Amino acid sequence: MLQYEKLKKEEIKVASELAARAYFDYIYITIFFPGLKERQRGLARFLAINRKGNFKGSHMLTARLDGRMVAEAALEPPGYKQPSVLKFILSGYLKMYFLTNWKHLHAFLAKDEEASTPCHDYQKNNPDVWYLSMIEVDPPFHGQGIGTQFISYLEDYVRQHGGKTMVLFTNNRENLSFYTKRGYELFHEYEITHNGQTMGNWSLKKSL
Image 1 (cartoon, rainbow, N blue to C red):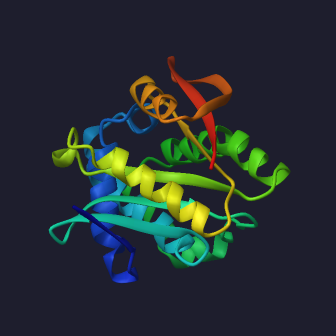
Image 2: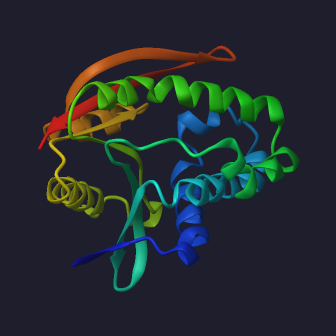
């Protein structure tokens, strides 16, 4: 049985390392950070900075199995405001310039903003919409139904907090199939190209 809890601030490092394992070979990351050493140095750190900067504004939730964190997610509620540049700097953002190629980092941030824009626009233009900005299952626990159970919990969580719709985006066809089988409807799609590589970008919604 999975147990669900809010992420504690002192657990940010553990959650970020889990997410880094989940994203390490994911095209959305590798297309911008092709070098293994760069991802090894900077990915977990970048994810930790993101969580620190968003900690108060987002709802960060975890799934645990026998006390071990096996999945984590971040939900942005209606009215969510992006943290200021100063907040990210205070969370350690400048250190990323020593861990990654700054051109790679800037390209990723620009494309990430572009990729998430359909979800953000849908959230702004419709009532009671929550945006699932991140969800990861630790790779050793893939194939055990944890993602299915966790997404159901997140949907219940949104309902309990007054949400009527949840939106998210993915760049992986397997993930696209996972969500559509669970009642998510595609509302925007396009292709992202970077350095001669192309990946899909699918934005989905589900009425709760």
